[in-house]
Length: 392
Image 1: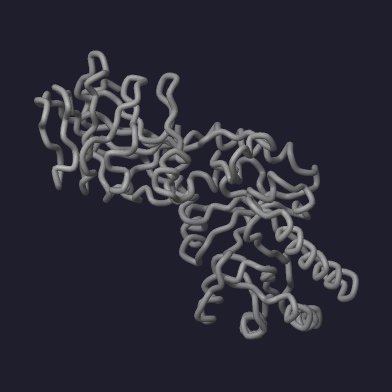
Image 2: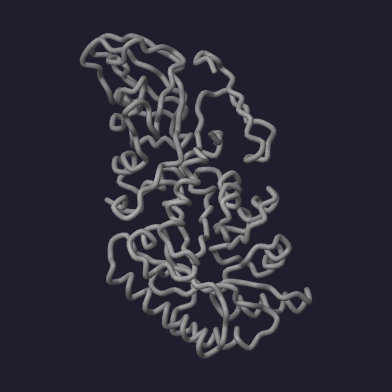
């Protein structure tokens, strides 16, 4: 495509469910499916041969595009995908996804259980009232319904506290109307605290043994998020639940010592306006940046409404022709200015990389997260849904 072209048309019907992606504003996200498959392959090589993978596709695949990557996971033979809500699961079913889909959040009100069952979505059950409601629905539909039982071993969100889990499991074992296909927990500090993580794991494995040995229940046990998957093979159990690792986002510093993955997402735009300004020229709202030399300033069609956070003003870099260029002035709702004075032959239409690689330079989500004092996957999750995701 010529860099001056104002319309970008990319055919990706097989993955997106649409005939083509058309957009006019020069601001898009590229998702590298081959890198996604590479990360899946690396994870599969790292875990035991009989350990299953549940690909965590929640929150629009951490901002990467749920439908395309759920399909990519299905292509790779992944046993399960996980979503955060009933709505997310329905979107995947309407996109004709055949994989098992687990809803990680509790569904409320319980009347919505029927919607989940109608779309073949597996519910998370955490307390006796949820179990009873699901059992009543199974009786009403005259259909055996599978679910996963969530144990809270120290995260404190949803899940049955460990001391209450034993009595609930006894009721589960007595029912012939519903079946516990899985049991799981979630680690709170797998990236930073191996002692507490081991405590959580010990609590969970004790409950697993009780359910299997004392009650004769058969189910998939899973616990390991990406941080636990990378750091401790003891956490892998029957199935692992990678989220970050699938997208090439690092779950903790130096995680590549355990498992090296590739970033899947790049965020790109183009220079749409150029002007030369004098030394002492003030830029953007609040006049928060003043040039100290004659400067060439480029405007790009990206702003905080796109998820490029205003707190990156005068702090972040982007890439133009393989060179780092600083953000200058406050980021506005739909536009941002960058200093391209040192970029030779820069022109309107030049590609600008906000996240990703250009030449030998790389701006990672981790770099932006550090400026924001947050985590790398908040950065990708916050990229606006109005930005098209293009599979490359």
